[in-house]
Length: 392
Image 1: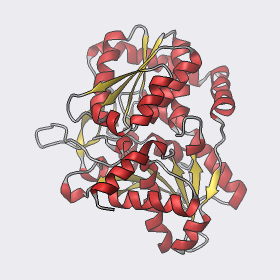
Image 2: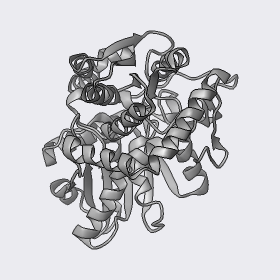
Image 3: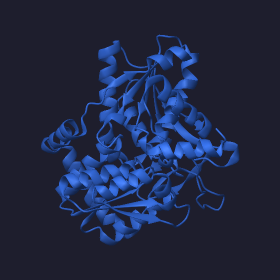
């Protein structure tokens, strides 16, 4: 198993977590090599999630921009409405294999919480989800979905009351109850083996998209673009093209109100090296090492760190990481709604915004593959509030 990506990653945790991490690592290595486990995983993705998800060319939007063809990988069409379910199914099956009786999770935008609650119901396991109190308010529809699915939702009021603090509480729960509890981390962050494990469960996105582009266009895309908070949807997409150097990998961080304002969540572009949630990574912190409160209109990107593999890909130049502001993301949200009849998640809108910027600078035969990581039902009220505050 891979514990480090260059200088990033590792297991910076309390001694009490080393035994459950070692147990998890051994169990995952065994499951990864077990054809029966892999078959069950892919059968559920097919028969329950509805995979494979299609690719859709955004023809009207591309024509309006006058440049590259924008092609969407439609993770928004998955059961539960986002890419998160790919990973929760994999981890829940692993929990069952390990004999764990209870699932816990952290969530920001709520999609990972919904996906964890969904698979817990499917497998008949109790589930608790930790969610920042601010996110509970701005993602109320997903809170109700989690409760409807039988999960207990714990609103976390400490710190900034967002995703970072939810993850802190979930880790505390796991330390206390690791004998019977499995912590379903929602992104490619945290201590090893989580970054590798989550990437492996999400790489179905990139593997499908690579084959679909070859079948439809006879070639690979020029660029593969995805939003990055912790970075699981991006790493899932990138994994399919990692060995194709001609495909430029582009991660898009949340610029909030702009890097210069300090109100953003761009850990690679605006952060520094540190340790967060059990891994060495780039994160937003003060000179004294205190975590800086992040800001984004998108709850799912509102996280002060980023997956360690993303940091390494940035350092070696295999991927580039740009920044999109709230204003740009909302404009892209509106554009996809009005030109394509697709309501994207605010997280995904950051990736769409980056494609909108790039498309006019490229020839008409260029292909920009954008991971539409989720649908925007959950964000409607948030978008309306944001527009009202802006006088729009």
